[in-house]
Length: 180
Image (cartoon, rainbow, N blue to C red; front, side, top):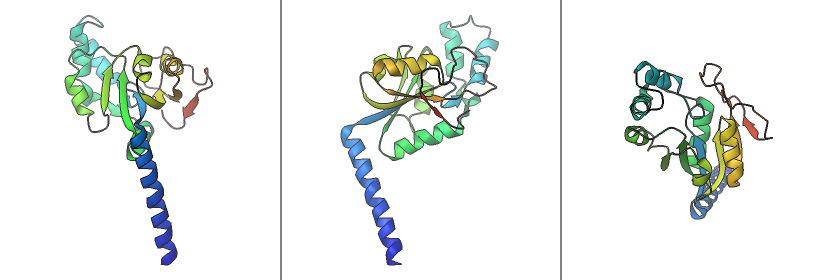
């Protein structure tokens, strides 16, 4: 019984030191949204079906308010939750336009301290104390490298409609296993 108590107390102490250190240092970890944290193909299909011109403000309003059609990707979400449990601020950055995105931001408030609609992700990554950025596309990886942040590739689902800018390992980045 004494041995178990010591082991548990040691684990709790390590956790508390880690959590406190991360909080004091104000460390952050970033996640791309589409095809990284969530599988969003259905939301984009809803935008297409709406009849609004592609990439118009009306199109983005439909896409951004169709988050109920999106599916969480298990391994990346678990990774985000682990970072959050260790005291890191989780930040979501999406290249989408922000039209009508207030409800989407509100929906993810439980996970992410900040949620940005920004194509130039390195501008956000350079401002914070980010230790890693998780993304699926080549541009996610290059934006992290540009900002001096460790990039980690998340695999896309084979069912994703978006096929461009995807060459895992091209930048010698780490690849999150089982993340598709």
